[in-house]
Amino acid sequence: MDMSFRWFGKDEDSVTLEQIRQIPGIKGVISALYDIPVGEAWPVYRIHQLKTEVEESGLALLGIESVNVHDSIKAGASDRDRYIGNYITTVKRLGDQGVSLICYNFMPVFDWLRSDLAQERQDGSTVMAYRQDIIDGINPEMMFSQMNADANGYLLPGWEPDKMEGLKALFDTYRGVDEQRLFENLVYFLKAVIPVCEEYGVNMAIHPDDPAWPIFGLPRIIHNRENIMRMLKAVDSKYNGLTFCTGSLGTSSDNDLSGMIKELGDRIHFVHIRNLKIHGKGHFEESAHLSSDGSFDMYAILKSLYDIGFNGVVRPDHGRAIWGEISRPGYGLYDRALGAMYLNGLWEALEKSHLRN
Image (cartoon, rainbow, N blue to C red; front, side, top):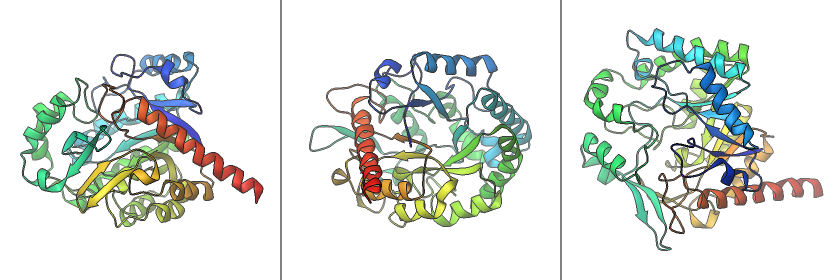
């Protein structure tokens, strides 16, 4: 298991590569070229610059999160082939630079959604939280503006200003796109991209929907065992895989996280691990990674990964805001570093337990 840390770049992240390197057990970072407009091919020199910057800090660039998929591809618009061509060019260039992991998602309009970016907990920390009753009563365009306003001055991934400004047009793009059509558009995309991934040794790891149900009338298709297995079988290549995100899949109590890990096996290319405190259907808040702080059994999750022989990339996911730190919501240094240490400790215990037996 390669423990990693998400890094948004020196100009956009409150956390530095020097700080990340000082977290014991961290082997590298997951990053991206966040300023490249969605749909454009990534320049070779920019990929090389990112990789060099990370390696000169003493870390490795373990993967890209994300090479975002243009909405024309998701919606099956008439210009989708042009954007798929650009995506393929980026895959080739990343493969040429030795990058073998791409995390992406196929969520229409919103990459993720929360009703609160800084809900205060009893210990004084703040976390991102979700309440369906609040979401049901708001205008999505107002939500879009408020979320960015509450982000401590940081641009939120998937909530870029160009999206906010063109939100109505984006919703119009998806008129007539139901779950079946969205799935067909995903398969169309994968059938074009995966053969290139096979040639260049790049694993595509789709990120589950967050939360694991439709929002604002928009369809969502990667949120349970049945849909994930359907996607994997539709393009049955080992390079077509999953980012197993405990926090996204765990928003639905119908998802057996440990059981899904065992069934998905080597089609899991990347793992995001975070804990949630589930208060009821459609109502959750994020928590510390420690099992007892939330609703998930982290030992059982790590043991399932160990049992399938997982040797890919893992990262601690959204953390609490603690100790007065001001950062991008969910992506501060302190709580994610605590999470990484805790997860590494569980993994060490699993390895040593196996050796004793």
